[in-house]
Amino acid sequence: MTPQKLFLTFFGAGLSPKAPGTVGTLASLPVGLAILYYLGIQTLFMMTLAITIIGILEINKYEKLTGDHDQKEIVIDEAAGMWLSLMIAYSTAVTMNYPYAEIGAISVSFLAFRLFDIWKPSTIGWIDRELKGGLGVMGDDVLAGIAGGLLTSLILMGINKFLS
Image (cartoon, rainbow, N blue to C red; front, side):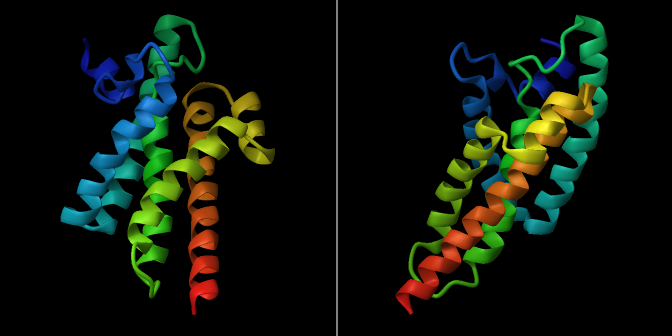
């Protein structure tokens, strides 16, 4: 496997025969958590920014090479989206005053990201349909990650309000 394919498939997670997007998201979650806990949210943000920019460029090259747009095996976009969702949710969770807020943030951010990534409402769907190349592949997942993180934050704040 080439380094490019290793990167685009998030170390092979995208090669899963069933639900490669979900498998890629699941594979990226513990990596994102490890970066978040051991290196901090700033490092996770910079890593997300880096894989987004590199992802756009590498997807453009890969699509030119294969002639296909948005192949299912490409899941680096899921990693970027999941990490964005996780960062937004986690930064809200640490301000909450109830037990298990952080665990809730992790699990709900995963579910919320997958919801927006699969459903593709509004601008997320427009980006997926209209933008071609790496920008389209990465863009919808970045926006889905932001939406998933914001939804998770609203849920966490609602729980906090209900419990206080």
